[in-house]
Image (tube, rainbow, N blue to C red; front, side, top):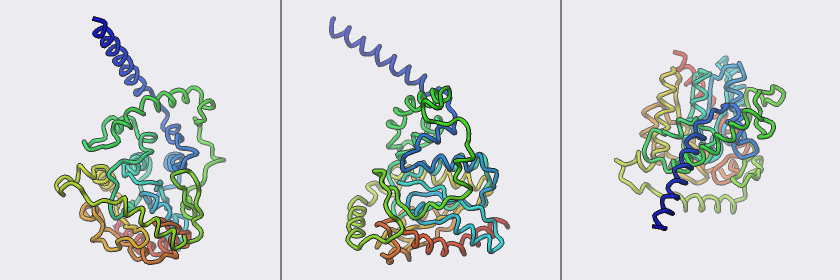
Length: 341
């Protein structure tokens, strides 16, 4: 009888814990405070992204979304100047965030299309997408998107869901006592970074350290980085018919982003950004066929042979970013022209 009673007590405790977590998960929050949760981390640009979308009345004409290769590779203010000189729409932003995981781009796109209507959205793509979602998604995503990601093969689903009640409790408390939680309720124009931010020139590493992006890495450093990257890259384990299972994050959210863009009359394009000495042909881009359903895929594979343009194995120096940005002016101008027809 004693073991049975203990088992019942455990069940009661678990039931109470689950019920409490469920209640906490549905506590209300302020989206602006939610997008401040990553202040002080490598994803601190999240606050500026939200502020640019919701508090800056200037339109957004061209938006870049992608992983850190895109963030380090495209100088938005420089591209804006070049487009303005051509008499083209020139409000350009780079909303890329470090690390891979396409669901974080979807979180940004949801905010973007709720408040702005860009003319062109450019997604940065790499040779092989991650099998996992983004580590910061659970901080920024809407509650309903965490509860129901919309596809079955979400490897991060349990960990994201477990964190949700804790996030909501913090945000609920911050709604009443913002200073105590370090999350502002009101937008402060004095600390706003402006309508376009240059995300090139420095690399924020996963441990939080900032790496100099002004100068190229040494040959030995590049080789070590490439070996580590290639050692962690594995070809698909499952047959092509199950790609939506193995690479669900990339395939599901690229579709959602592109379809929402097209629904809003926004032109979609893709840019392939290689790592140093990596594959440089579009045929080497694993998901190229998927991308081409929604827009042209521009190949920046020429970068991969220029060690002098890489700050590390996968990210460009400031000068390398200027080379890439200047190279993008022509295609972006063409895409803008097509978007306006």
